[in-house]
Image (cartoon, rainbow, N blue to C red; front, top):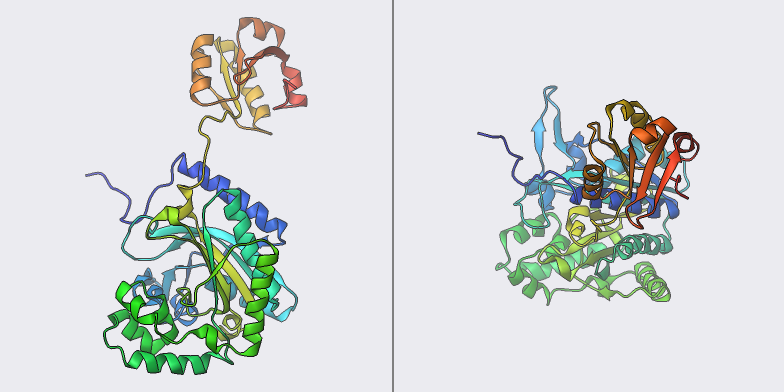
Length: 412
């Protein structure tokens, strides 16, 4: 019996893999334009890192981690999200002691053992942004605008939702009010009963429709913010309006992780069905200190790549690169050398087997090459190569020496 991929884990093949590469390259470039540098952390971390950061009340820790004891007796797990590992790295490399602002972007696979469905896999990929050391709400706005620019580039339809989760100055009193409200509702789901004990505010993130109806009457955090949080949230709205960014305030938006404070936001898309969140994040000013580092303000977001790949347009008919072929065996060395020159600047594929011109052109058309470059007996004797632009049908015989001087621009 043939071995298949594990449930909830999928191979990434063309054309989806081409979309993935295009997304990563574009998102990385936009992040760099905003002043962010690339960071990469291990896929495997100590389980304690996520229990302490993500929180015992979250479904990730409670139900979904790929956790095991390794051969050295260490309790480890595959990373279920990206922020905790980057905070661990930030502290371990003493960046929290250096002062200043540190801005990173990352991408790669995450793992959660949950029920697979459309837009939710057990192995999935995220692109994320993390900014450390800047407490200004203008950084929150910058992070949101960065996410918006990525989604806009790919014409992803979305709605932006924002909320404020308060801070240690205003959250305790709200938590008391919320707990009092919840004590009068034993008809909430079992998950919410568990969250009621561990982190009451997380009940607002419940996806159970009956629970959501109940929480419509729950105390609103936005009405319990301290003066500082109120001012920051008002300033955030002013910045977004000044930048012509449409948004709506969602008082029940709390995100799925325990470490968020103050600003929380999500980009949701009606084009995705039930799993409609394409990007989300917020501020987490207490996490660095909580994990043993120096108190450091921080804010970030993550984009679920699989959820938007189907929404990214990819022109499969777009021609690119060179198809190189020979009509006589003796021309293969010259064709090989020419192909290697092309590959220094652009995509090029060499067909080793001699074929007729008609067969080569058919193969070049099938691979969507922009140019067909063929060496026959006449071209071999002239130390040249015949090149045809398959887009505008222009033809030209080019000296092989010209390829060395200017690969990929020989017909210009």
